[in-house]
Image 1 (cartoon, rainbow, N blue to C red):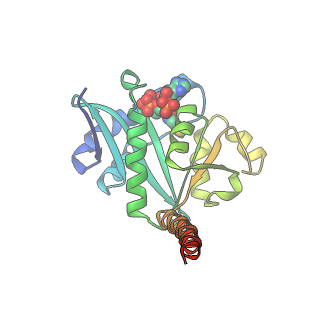
Image 2 (cartoon, protein in one colour):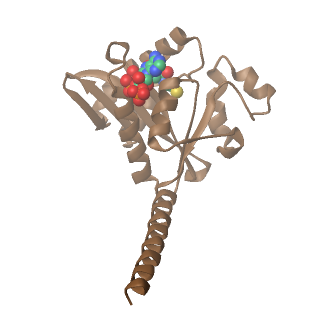
Image 3 (cartoon, protein in one colour):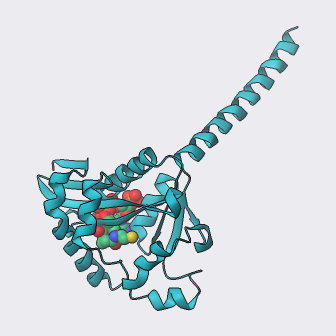
Length: 205
Ligand SMILES: CC(C)(COP(=O)(O)OP(=O)(O)OC[C@H]1O[C@@H](n2cnc3c(N)ncnc32)[C@H](O)[C@@H]1OP(=O)(O)O)[C@@H](O)C(=O)NCCC(=O)NCCS
C-alpha cells in the first residue's frame, strides 16, 4: 500500500465533492450526527492550506481540515473521513496527526478541540494529548455551534442550553502551552538533579 498524507493543495480541489459524498454517506450509515459539508467549503480549505488529504495507491482515501473559532483562540480539526475500503489500517491516525501538527504550526497560540461520538477518534485524540472537557471549556462562538444544526441530535444540544449533548468534547493544549509545560517539566527535573548533586558533594566533602 503506497500511502500519501499531504497538506492539500489547490489541485486537490477536484476531490472536494467526492469528500463531501463520503462524509454524507458515512453519516447516514452511522445514523449519528456529522455536520453536512458543502463542496465549496471543503475546496476553500484546500485553497488556503488548511486541510490534509490522503491517497492510497493514488486513490482518494481520507481527509480532514482546520477550522478556527473565537478569533483564532480555538482550532478544531473537523471533517475526518476515511474511505470505507481503507479503514482499520491506521490511516485516520496518520491524517489526524498531520492535521494536528499543521494546526499547531499555523496557530501556535490556539487550543485544539473536537466533539465526537466516535471511539476511534477518541482513541486517536487521547494519543495526541487531548483530554476530555465539558462543553463550557470550548469556544462559545455561535458559528461553531451552528455547524451542529444538520446533526439529528441538534434538539438535544439546544434543550441542554449547549452545555451537553451525545458528543464527547476533547481538547489539547496550544503549541505554546505544550512548550511551556515541557519547559516546566525539564526545570523540575533539573531541580531534582541539582539537589542530588548537592547531596553527593556534601557526602564527598
Ligand atoms: C472514524 C474513522 C475516521 C476511523 O478511520 P480508520 O482509518 O479506520 O482508523 P484507524 O485505523 O487509524 O484507527 C484508529 C484507532 O481506532 C480503532 N478503530 C478504528 N475503527 C474502529 C471501530 N469501528 N471500532 C472500534 N475501534 C476502531 C483502531 O483499532 C485504532 O485503535 P488503536 O490506536 O488502539 O490501534 C473512519 O471509520 C470513518 O471515516 N468513519 C466515518 C466518519 C467518522 O466517523 N468521522 C469522525 C467524525 S468525528
